[in-house]
Length: 209
Image 1 (cartoon, one colour):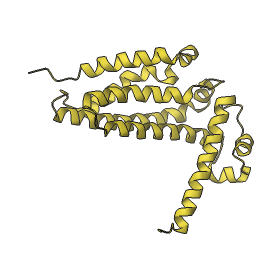
Image 2 (tube, rainbow, N blue to C red; image 1 turned 60 degrees about the horizontal axis):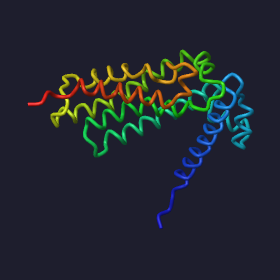
Image 3 (cartoon, rainbow, N blue to C red; image 1 turned 90 degrees about the vertical axis):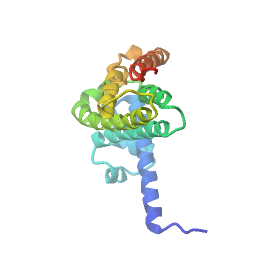
Image 4 (spheres, rainbow, N blue to C red; image 1 turned 120 degrees about the vertical axis):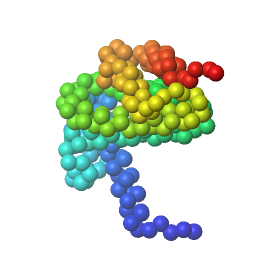
């Protein structure tokens, strides 16, 4: 039986503790919103001391941004799974465009205070991060565009530029662009992103011989 090194065990325990804190913070963000959430409440929810919380996060702002970073990392993993799956490039591209919207939509559903308070308090920091998130998503979309071009499905000259344009084109349906009413109406948003993704991908297909 393979022994786990003490260093690996320590890293695993630290990761688990950090995840517990992020889970607690995310639950409180949904229940009461960013402005009302306190570090004391997060520590209590995670069954940890407040001092332990500050070993991992410098401030409430750092903690909230880390929650959002985690959501976007998980989204990127979901997109990567689709991109490297067995479906055709056309199917994968459509699915990825839909997923990048609906994954975020699922993540913010249930926020009783909405997400406006997070946006208003952390707008500058979120916008800086958003550019990096979107660039990473565009890179994954570009991989599928290159695959599709190689297989003769897509007619694209600049895959990354096209991928960036696809990200921009679908950004209008992301949660921070939707009204409170639209955040509730998931079925409507899902139908809209499905239609938009089909239209966008259709414009990239190679002309039949």
